[in-house]
Length: 317
Length: 220
Image 1: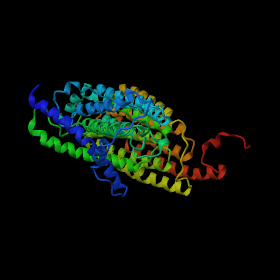
Image 2 (image 1 turned 180 degrees about the vertical axis):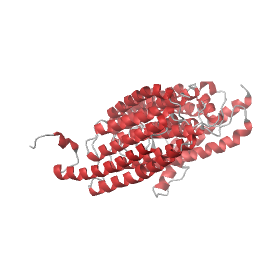
Image 3 (image 1 turned 90 degrees about the vertical axis):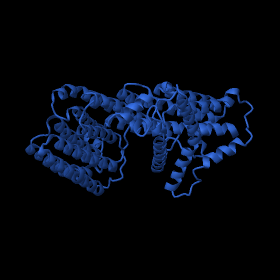
Image 4 (image 1 turned 30 degrees about the vertical axis):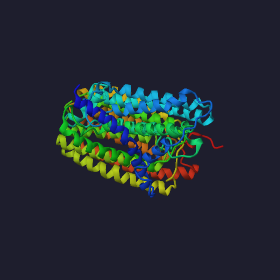
């Protein structure tokens, strides 16, 4: 492990923490433009965080230590996940730890804690949100794993680094199975990040909430941490999506000259992903909660089909 | 893996055809169903012309042109006209239990892939690995015909099945002789016209396009 790569790892960790609210702001801004509103600007999430950090926290009288600790655990999980995904370069000190199954595990850990914290206070909406989150989560997780397995069978490893290197630095090959995997992954991403067909991030109606219902009781710095963690989760999913489906432009191990190009490519891809997400959200309407299992079932089915097509089309030759 | 680039494009088209077959299976709106059918015809034409280009089979270009003309333009236009005249353009069919249907579809895909594996091992064409997908699309369209009760989606299912058969013929043997293909194309066109007349007859007799009415033998 050399010092430059250690530095690069630290820089990447700081970068994901800082640009996560920007991606959220950019997505909301694109959505506003598409809906003919002027929008609040791409920096609005930073202003929100700043405001929340300067407020005094209010806690329910029966809140336990778990309720207070959860925002920190949540932020730690999401930061770890977002920092592990190779965004700028491969071959960093944390690279050996980047296993796709471990990533899914980190997301599951965060989900368990936020659901427990939501039920901790004992209000009706918290428990309702927690149950719905668990319903969506347990349907989304197998689909996500199947998508990742499809990518793993192509590259022969569950390490995200190996997958990226196989896809980005080998001669270009069209993988039909990745088409299925991409569609399934986008569906999972919408569900996991509480975006529109499944959940509305901007809703004020408690009965339709999923994610928002769980964090209703949080205020001030706790809420800021939860929101920051949400932004990091969106960034983590977007970067996984980029790593799996459009990995070109990432810097190779020890190739420092490619870094500026990698930064530019990342900015371009994130901007595209944010705009695409806003477009998807503008085009679709929120579905009933009982339609969600159908939606997630379709995602799982597509992921399995991707795996099957891989064995049919890509291993025969 | 060393498949030539044209082979990769054909594989990609095959994967898209499978994707569309599943989209049709779960589509509730008749209008979107017909648009999906048109898209299927378009992809079929693209893949056929790529096969023609890579295998230097001139007659396949004619089939591709015929497919484009008939299945991506003519038949969808006729269907659009029909649903406008029958006033079922915005009909939404109540499909029960889509996840179960999709799981059944998945089982069919596994079955078709296994069935096609020994055949494609013996075939020497560039498209040999897509035979499984072609059979899967045939079976999926068949499943769609079984699960639908309205007349128009059933006919779309029938036409989609013909698309699957055509794709199977291209992937197994570089297409059928030109005479056979022309005959089938004409059959489909005439069949479509006759079925269109049937729709009107069914509607005047039963006041509905729901084919479940036809299962009763006695009038009550």
